[in-house]
Length: 214
Length: 214
Image (cartoon, rainbow over all chains, first blue to last red; front, side, top):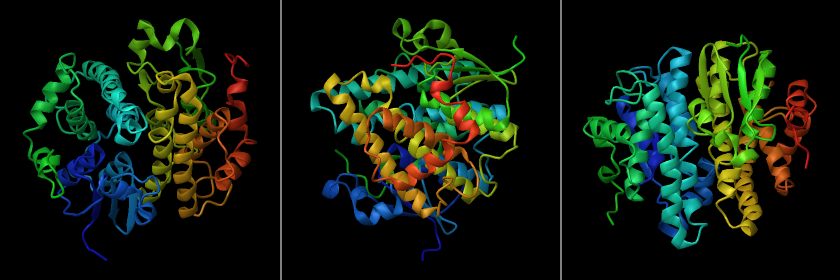
């Protein structure tokens, strides 16, 4: 058994990237096991991986003798067990503000625009579908940023939270699907700021060992 | 300003039902404001409601001078601010087990099979689409129940958790979309047990003031 946590990850998975950012911010060293979502009909669909994650998705994280699934759940666990730096405010109402931003992305956008869903649509509908649901979610997210008085550097308050860990990978997806980002100036500004942050730079899809450029 | 919390809800919305269960379990009296998802192209799409919930979804909850959105986020807030009875275990690893079950439903199933998504599909594809994604999620959920040693009464441990608040409304959706539940005996057993619980009975869609039977 490895002593380091093991992250089951795919370079281009926005959900994997969320967790990579949180691990990096917390200074947790980990091993990456690539689960190639394209090879052999998707290694995530193998019987071996189904035992690790019954949802057959990345990421999964083996840590503290547990195997955890679901990116937001994993990040909440990391934040509860390794508080430094905190990625959620301590006050319940402030925490709710951050979590609702997270949920707009992890429940409101990504599940509807991921590759599994798109693959069930006719090819000529996929781009428009992805654009529609990303834009719908970003319209709400932009409003939440206005309501939270975001300072333009971070989604909430004066430091990185789980909302930032969710937002930047979703902006990467938006660009991949050629979403027009001009209606979302606050999102673009935060993404620009965080793109230069070491934890976001080091964990970027292009920097992953399994990256396969188009 | 009302003294009671205000729940913006629709009788048939599974996400609204989740929160109604949690409010009932915690013994929190509340007022219901119906947001009719069908009337006038959906009251959730009105400008007035968009100010309450930028995602234009139900539920939203006005409580403690905050308006919170997203059902899981709302339930986490209720559980943090009103601990009795607790709906999440205190131990971080056990909490993660419950949260991952919740996420299978709130991110893995419901967002892909809700009416907004189905309405973007050709009519003849909707039923098969809903059945596919509910069955896929329930297949994972059934495995998680096996892994958590569920006793058949509850999803996790010896009492109701947020996972139960998510599961029962999703089973209701599954029946509505005529999903074959025979591959999911553990889910069916838990649903049968909880269907007789006062908090699940009182909050059932059919018992809501805005219920409009087919």
